[in-house]
Length: 427
View (cartoon, rainbow, N blue to C red):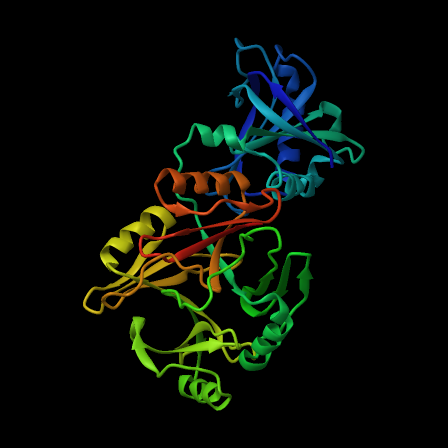
């Protein structure tokens, strides 16, 4: 579908207004017919175009009430017919898309614009309305061509006049980085010991990605022409623990020991839960297992998604930092144990992702570490993605350059004051 950009000056319209929940086109068609029956009373109308406006609240969802207005252009000074109202619309830039069919069939065209064209464009909605323009004779004519107008503004222009804030970040899984020559063997290892179902592998001359269970990707990079942005530190465990749940922690612990996989002892940790650490594959990538006896669905896997633990020197200071620079909310506080539970959103699912802050032992290393197991959060809008990166830079946060393609997959990471890496993806 072709979308054209245009500018429209101020509009002065006279017509009928109503509140409705009907987004099928029936209500607008009926209101337009009611207007046409009395259109002769609007003696100062400029032409035979009919405007159908749909205006929505900021929290609008399908099924909720919105405002419907149907009118025609008229002179500013007009005596209003009984029951009609005057509507003023300020000048805007518009994206215009043409629809073939009647007003009752415009839904798919509107959905295409809002759900496909707009998110992939450089524009955002400037105001919460759109309108259709049709001829008096074309209300229910299936051969009509109806122009649908959406007020828009360039994202960078809108964001230039708005204060930069921390965007809403959603947890979306993570990467387990493995060496290039052992990529396939590592994917098989996780399938065998975690009972994860391995998906397809995407490979290029410098990167291999295998989709695994629960939004986890096995990733390898090959660096021939200088440092690759996906290279990680090896041989040192970070203070970020990516945790995976099991209903039977003793059984899981015994399984890994019996299969000669390095594990720690079982210990008590954040949330009064029992944990153990394991070092996966021959590369020794540390992951953490959490006992979660109330686990209801394991999807046939030995380990299921849990949460992330972040070791910090001062939990009180870290709470404020993660609120200010990551947008986390405080869910629970346990000062006597040196823990705090923080929350973010979850991509593609309702609910909250959990991030435990826990106090590090004295003299723990707190320099930056790019660990091989990196959970990440996601942003989709490239302007929000870029602005967040700039916000972190301007705030003095230690942040990497953006790598990848801003119109496709891009990424950056940053470090908290305790050297913990936080990764952001855009796709």
